[in-house]
Length: 171
Image (cartoon, rainbow, N blue to C red; front, top):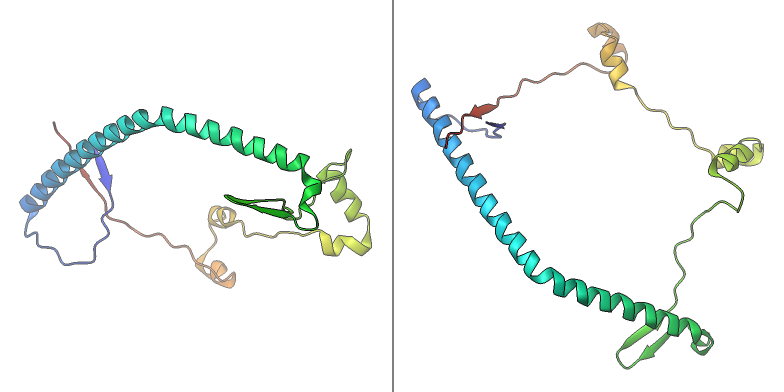
């Protein structure tokens, strides 16, 4: 059984419940054809992947090995890079780049310990510690406040009614 929420803003062409029932039958048939088509497509995709994956795996393995070998060679010849951090060769460029700066704890420290140290220092606690405040929407819904009380808080409870259909799919 397919449950669907259609997203249309048009006027209906259906005139009675018999036509609505016929529309459900057609929708059920269309859903079956779509599923069959998707199933066939997925089967063919899997076949293509199985055909090419072993060769691609072998190529990727060779590539990773060659990249690692090139990196090890360049690291062993780092003194030949002079002041530049890159060296241009006939078929490409090899280089060393700094990564984006990242903060990490010193050996023997945890982030919790760092947080405690910062919180004890007036100079840094206001700058380096942040407090996050969020609205607990579920608690407001569960409190069952009156509309006037909710309005004082600047909110209201909204509950939409959405149309859906369920077509019975038969084989």
